[in-house]
Length: 374
Image (tube, rainbow, N blue to C red; front, side, top):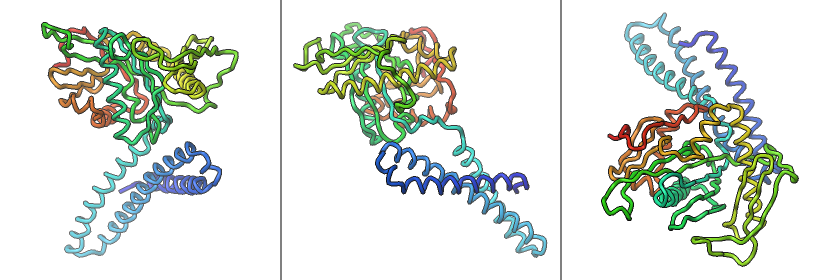
């Protein structure tokens, strides 16, 4: 049974959600909104989420009314009818508790950037050639994961190592809740395996750092023309050879902060410049957000920039076919499937156990320790 106060709060929610749903329905029918696919998608996502809340509130209100009516009926009911009412009451209460829990989950404070597109940077850290090879493999896994989620990807820049791996790769992921799907990949990823060149069979440990940034609208970040320097040059591929006969590659330096962004994977200089500006906006937005929580910002940035083996969010142990996420202390024994893009079970487990807004605390320890062995 709900108290009078709870019923009043429920009625207020019902009125608020109904009004908001009507406003969003009206907005979705606006021809001007249809001309902006990004805004139309955002309003559509908000509307669907609101409908889920509205449906739950309506059903909770119905259940509360039924329970109240049953209490009235029991006063004049004989024993047989009273037993039936009690049985129904048990069922109604079970459904009510379930719906109340679902509504709490629906109303939890979500990351307002979840619906945004995102930019992913992958950098080889400690471990030399093995780190660069794993950076390439991890990027391939992410591209496959995005494909499985029906998200679009667009490579902005790849900096090759002396081997066939990557020193750095940057790419865009666009589509429904792209940032939400990838944001928990942010951090240092450790790989343990025997390199092909290792004759003694010794397991090597190396790291790759991943930075996931939400793509923010132009209005969020004001970049003044006098604060940036733009350089153009010819794109290069593996081994440093030129892959283009025109100066299509673009490097943008933000003078106040020293942030440098390079894009060269598009054949058009204008497209490379547009992508570089988007990445710069995202970096500046992230910098502004980090400054609001300086201590956590410093921890995150220092760990990611150094690629230190001792600071990690996840370990990929190939000899044991094991992937361990250290933030939630959980392991999966399907590493080949994960590297083929099957990150969904890991993403679901991490997102469920880490509350919205909770800092992604990196686990520290000796690189040769065995604390995450099964």
